[in-house]
Image 1: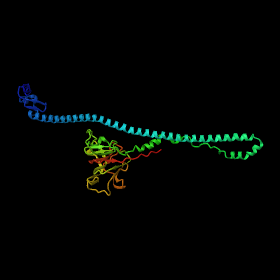
Image 2: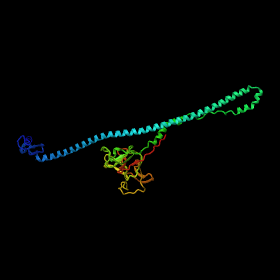
Image 3: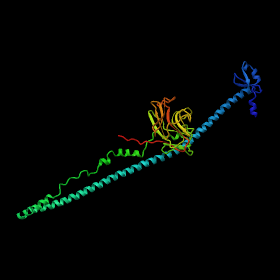
Image 4: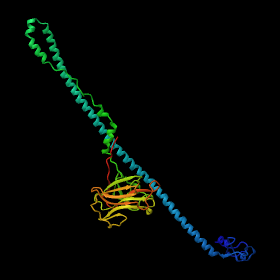
Length: 384
């Protein structure tokens, strides 16, 4: 307290400091004010100046505290995301291994089938050759016997030769017909190894369906559960997911970003009664500034495009929704694909982004139903 009292006393006149010289930016006493040094200067009460300065410092301190809180939050979020990356890596590793094991199993089964087909053909054709060899060997034995007996007959006396002539001729006429070489008994190498890798690849489409849209787990709310292959979503137990900027604040998950061109995907509703589907564009890290074109249902009340629930009634029962986005024509359309019924088209929506720039458009999925929304997968077409 003694030290503070000394700070409040003028060192020149040993008087209490009560004024603040605006021109010299210093605290002064009443005697200093009257001195020649401060002639013509402006003065303010020191307590008022201190009060104002304290308010400025308090405001700055409050801002510093907020920045500290923000920095702690960002640090903690980074720690959370660092831990979650390990969880993601383990999950991705497991999925990759599982899919490759399925592919390897398919290849092993297909390889065994191909080898079995070769062995079966070898067995069949080897049997044909053995049977042909046995038949020809019997013919050779018969011919050799006839030739030998006929040669002996030619060496016999005239009377014996003439007597046995007809019998000899009948035996010769009844000899086996000319043996033909076997055709097509070698293994069909063309069938077994011709374009082998391509034909195996073509058959692999049966176990490798293609999804035109892949759901992004980094945008999904914690209460949404995604299929292992990222082609379906439903309400489920809360997931451990960090609060990264891309993650939505409501029960939403986005699909992979759309590129230039035409994009078509179908979504199986499967009895889900609370869903919204469509397209969103803008900066998804600033979700309040994004724009959407949607179709949705909430307890048998429907919406389409910008309308509220209950503002639209579908012409048919909605079972499978098809969304078509043509970024070149700047159009978004919805249809019921099982009945091939058009539901609505929007041309040149406002604020549609230039997808060649930084802005992106994404497939949009929202649900608060435990019945999943499923992206309909396609069988790829393999062509040469």
